[in-house]
Image 1: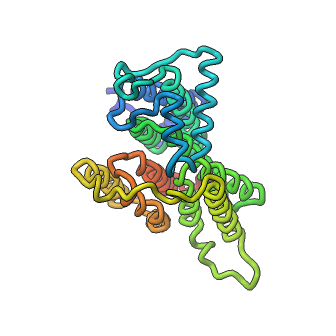
Image 2: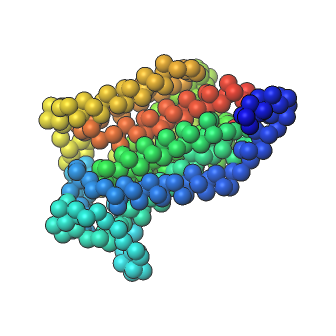
Image 3: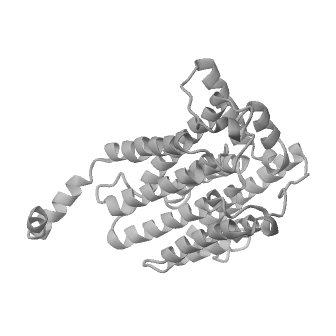
Length: 354
């Protein structure tokens, strides 16, 4: 009966009532950016044990894995995790771990496993907070469908993808989202361009997914970027793209100059080794979500441009990694979801300038 009476209210009165129910940004960001991510992360790290990542839950095993091969270039996450481990030991913070920890690593250390939890949960929370602002959750004319629901989807996806436990995924999501937030602030000023360059450097020190920042920036500004520059003069978008590309290439090359060029691009070709029903499921998942995004309105040219610009990341992932690790596809899904929701919001709230 309450719902029936609602629809008989005058439109003006209904619209005012709806706005009042969505003007609690502090509570919403607390729930979406703190409470729910922490609970989801706790469920994943305490309620389940990974069936994939092993022998990396002690300091010695961790260093043996992440200071060699392709992993040695992913510097920032490794350093932060070791710092987190030291902080847990020094301050005797509470620990958690699945019952099967010793089966995953004979030298498994509850404090070291907890370092993954603390660090990845922190950056999962920070990522969700940034996504809240990207989707415009702080604006009064947003609602559950255009902000909270897609953010819940992205939060759950990032959390459940941590069945492969690593020290850099949620950190890389944070840098991706932070870069996107700056891109949506309009024409890049000198300071925004500089900040994007810094974020790209930090993201490249974390994981190769930093390349997707370049792809997203190109897609978001492709009209201005593809404008033919006058001789020796580039527009702001072209200059910023050149800057962040230079930052990525410089960081990528410097890491390899410092740590050596052995396995500098990939560790092994995995396509034929891992091409089974599970790897097929990973490919089918990302294709299915992409089809859902592109087969429902609105669909923008930016989304297609992003997929094309992101091929240098996606194609190697099919060849050198196990597609069953859906964490590899989470950045693509996150960025496409953001594009989809921003296009949806533009249709629903055409006057919104966020």
